[in-house]
Image (cartoon, rainbow, N blue to C red; front, side):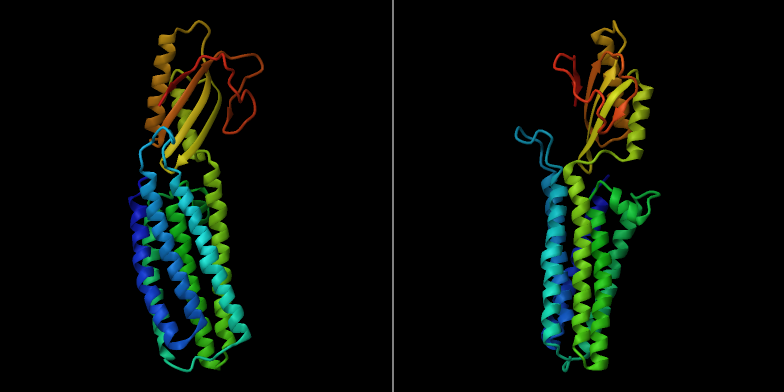
Length: 329
């Protein structure tokens, strides 16, 4: 998957949040509305998160070395996990603390009453533009998946993160607008505190969802079912169609490891096996370009090992030390 769309969505979100954050802090300084402070900190957290995603993308492009022979692509998952931590702590917990403080000491908005309304309405427009960009870029890669399925199954963390952040930002702005409006109408600062609490809970929920999904990526996810079907078809079309077992793992969004043991006919020559291995690798890379590391181990089919075990099965899972191995990367 190309990172161009992800980068475009990140830059759009960062540009919007930087401008919005400054205006929110100004609005808080003029009015003292806790909803405005919570939203200002939310924008700061989002801006920091988008910078983390850009840093992660840059770090992931480092060349493999002796210490990290499979490269640095997983940096994109690590920095996405940091986003969840920042969103939970700096965004969600701070907003909940501010709400608790305001519930104890509610204050009406007595000065510059029009400022928070104007700021929030403008922010809604800017966040809407950022969210629209994320949706457009996501539509280019999500295929037939629904939005929940895309966030859960995507092997690229940036677009799901930006989608959730922008969606949360829009909801947070609506919560802030509700709290501020009700405070202005009733003169009761408890509404402002309630809006702040809603923002805090929203950010905590989004952070937990992001942490769960990025943890799964960090642990090492297999290829998608669609890519698995393409790899299976590539093997079937080659001379190595009899797969004993296979393991796949995303080292990064655009870096897939394929390791498998295949049965070859008794009496096969080393030359014919090597030709079949090369053919299988070529077909796999054509079917799934992200499959950059492919390890194929030829073996003889033993009694009781009929049938393939793919991605995590137990049968014949460990190759014996004496097996012949043909590995190409």
